[in-house]
Amino acid sequence: MSQATRDVPADPESGELSERDQQILDFERQWWRYAGAKEQAIRDQFGMSATNYFQILNSLLDSPAALRHDPMLVKRLRRMRDVRQRERSARRQGHGTA
Image (cartoon, rainbow, N blue to C red; front, side, top):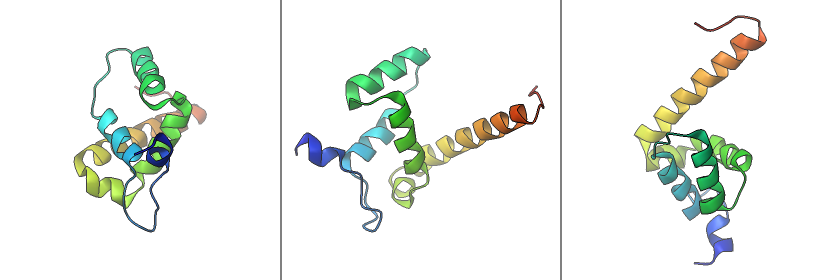
């Protein structure tokens, strides 16, 4: 399969994940000791910026196909995203977190 074909996002109507989307979910199963190591691995493995990667990942987390593909991972990542959003919201409102 060509690189261009693999990079095409899944068709939301089909309910299937693209190969790239599956690779992103597989990549998220790994644990990283240092933040910079993950950003470099994103550039090396996917050829995109960390910002672009996280935008794609965020979309994937809301995808029913991703939830079917790996329910435990997607639910964990959703919880982590929700906590970060609440913390950002609290900081914007002037409330510190403990």
